[in-house]
Image 1 (cartoon, rainbow, N blue to C red):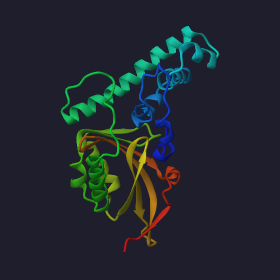
Image 2 (cartoon, rainbow, N blue to C red):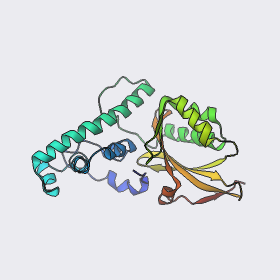
Image 3 (cartoon, one colour):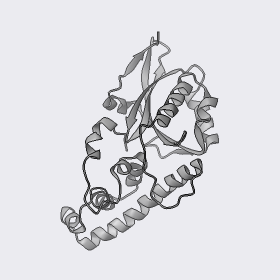
Image 4 (tube, rainbow, N blue to C red):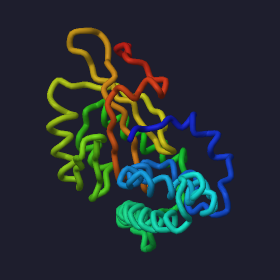
Length: 240
């Protein structure tokens, strides 16, 4: 699983899926959905994407996969259970964080690139660049999730997040610069670490942020190798 630049996804938003599609385009490109897809065997993944994202009829999918409609329906049923369970967990985190009483496995429609989101990203950027752990922690929901694919490791809860940031991100002597971008319909930050032996900041990580209201519900970190596809440079100069 890797993040994908929003600028390369723009043309997808205008494409209308078939009548049997279950997921909106903005939901289908979210990291939560992409993560759920990684949990599926190949046949289930193909069936779900073709039927529920692209909206092909069962007969068309069966022909594409060289199988029967019954096999497609069976694979789709199992795939939906896995994906909906994963999305329900994400939805539960967002709802409990924002005080919502809504139920169901589908997450509310995302409203990206809002003024509130811009303010949140600016506050996160400021906290990272000032190495202000307390300010960063205030932006996180109580049950925030931190993950770093492809590592099968996830930190859950604000206390675990605080320990992680203290031991890793905000180790003594580390300073950062941040460049905002967008990935998978979500805000993202290119994180640059100061080189102690040169007057530059080197690409360190890409952080994809999941938000709910004015708080962060999840941070997904990727290594610096993905940053060039977002048009982010390998180094940044020291600020004036």
